[in-house]
Image 1 (cartoon, rainbow, N blue to C red):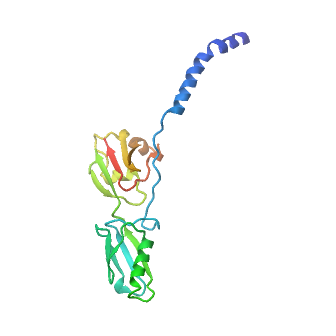
Image 2: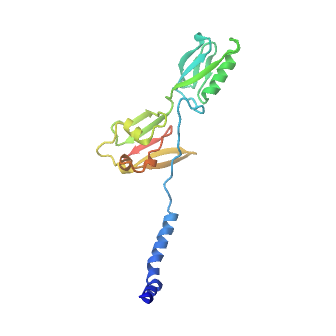
Image 3: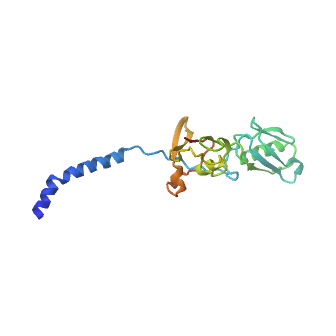
Length: 205
């Protein structure tokens, strides 16, 4: 019995082991799907960069006539009493409050200014294809792919939920991230339901 077992190992087993070894090598060499970076952003995030159409609450301590809610214009500026137009887009709330403070020193003794982002309207994402309401939508903090599709009214009966993908521009190149709607709904592939970034396009074939 032992002799025949050794003969099997010497003559037959290599025929099975070699294909398995080659298959394992193919798995190691096969290109993996790109993994999207995690992106979180909220009005309270100190690193958030203000954009056009965002709404801000500008408060000057003990100066109610200088405190107001403003919206960033398409040119990236806001109108502040005594200062007229102030550049806001491209700045953090802390940097903008510093700029406004510096400008008000000409008119107010030791001004104390705080700026809060009360609405993120500059961040947009797009949904195309077989959804009920394709179009442009406001990107809320930590909104993921499934929530984005829900915002667009959900899939039509003709949608291919297995072939959905997200297009994103990274370093000047367009990257495609796949999203299997059916599996995510079943609680599978939860890592594919990643947060969107401003400018992302969700395509539903």
